[in-house]
Structures are given as C-alpha cells and as structure tokens.
Length: 324
Image (cartoon, rainbow, N blue to C red):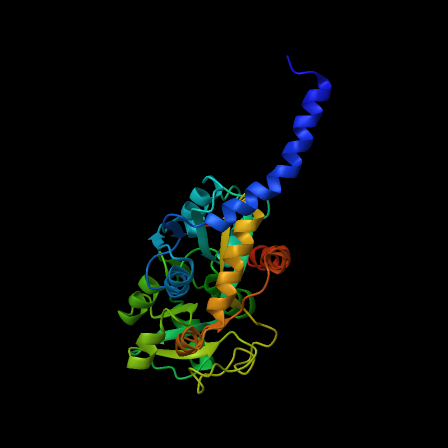
C-alpha cells in the first residue's frame, strides 16, 4: 500500500516528467496523417485555405494533412466532431468566422468556442462581396437596391450565420429596410452557382467563392466589405463608398485543435503554419484569390476569438437573425 508520503513523491515526479513527455510527443508529432475537418462545402474560403496551407504543412511536417469536408448546420456539424475528438494532435479544425457567430446564433451550437478548442492560428482573411447575376440590370449597389425595393428578391448566402450572411442582412434588412429573405446554401461554391443561375439573383460571399464567376462575367460584383478596395477587383467600390459607412466585415479562416491538445504540439503547428504563410508562392496564390495572410500566435488567436464573439452577437441581435 502506498503511503501518503510515497504518493506525494510520485505526484512530484510526474509534475517534473510531464513537460518532458509532452515535449517528446511534440518532437515525434506528426507520426501519421492528420485529419483536418472543414465544416463547409468544397469551393469556399475554408476549403481553399485548408488545402493551400495543408499542402505546405504536409511538405514541412512530413505527414499528409487530409482535408475532410463536413458541411451542415452553418458549420456546427464538423465543428462539433472536432470538439469531441481526442486531443492528440491528429484531428484539427479549419473553420471560418462562423465559428464565433454561431455562439449567439444557435441556442446550442454543440460546442463552446472558448472552452472546447485550442486555437492555433488565423491563416487568412478576406472581405465579403455583394454580387448579382449577369442578367440583373444593375451596375451599382444603389441601382440594385432600387430594383429590390420593387421586387423583394431573396439573397443567397453560404450558410446561416456566416459573415457574408450577416453582411447582407446588415445592408439589405437592418440598414436598407428591405423585405429580403436569406436563402442559405451549404457553402460559398453552391451559393455563387445559384446566383449564376439567377435563383436567387443576388448573393453575398467571401470573395474567393464567386471570384471565378466574376472574372468570367457570369456574376457582377457591386461592393466589397473591406475598408479599402481589393486589388483583385480594383473597380469594385467598398460598402462605405456605396453609401454604407461603418461596415468593415471579413471572413477569416483559422486552425484549431480540440482543447487539451499538448501545448508543445499547438506551438509546433503554429510555427509551421507561420512559416507557410510567409512563403512567396503561397502569398502569391492568396493574392490571386483576394486572401490576406494573417498568422500570429495561439494567444493572439484566442484573444481575437474573445473580441469577435461579442461583435457578431450585436449583429445577430440587431437583425433578429434566426438559424435556418
């Protein structure tokens, strides 16, 4: 039978050994492929960034990053899977700013954004863009709003609670006072494709989703939600220039582990991701798709999550927005 003194000695030895064991685990990590859940459909910003950054991480860490799309419930399905995954460094989440929006949008999103995850890094961000199908006779946002006041069309979003959805709600319903209904799709790709077909005739998405259609002339961009114009679409005005001052919204893509993942593994992935985000070829790919690389420390990401939750809660409550 172990005496209290013996138990105390064992506990002290464990406290000394635990950091060394965690460090050893980090040195060996990853020793097998890593599962990366993207809780949105292919073709959207999360999927694009996960694959671009994932390829760089595969090269630098020596193990494949396997991207798995699990769309549904505004990102909650895939996010919930990661929240419950083993915190061993072999399951991680690549998600968008819907991660912080859903906290106030859904009564029970299936996860706690601050308790259930270990933030790693914000990989990239980009503004949202309001766009219409080529057949809509509007060249500016004000022209479209004049049409919409007479027709009250629906508008496409990549999912309930995504920042494009909330940007559109703010422009069309909260400020514009229009009776327009959000039509939610399972990701930016399906959302943009629906507007190309004119069903509905207008949408809002992070730029990378509709960008190929905008470049080909199948969609027409009316306004972007950034503070300044986007180099990829230099002729498209900002929302402030279009009569909506004070709106500066971005869709960001971040990487997180389940809570409890060893800090040494979190730091190792953070360092590898920051190196990837500095590589010239990746930055060139980002620029072509209107993404801005971000980077930074896990602590900075955790603090950012803490500021984003109340910011988007105000938008959700002001617009009386309900989950789809």
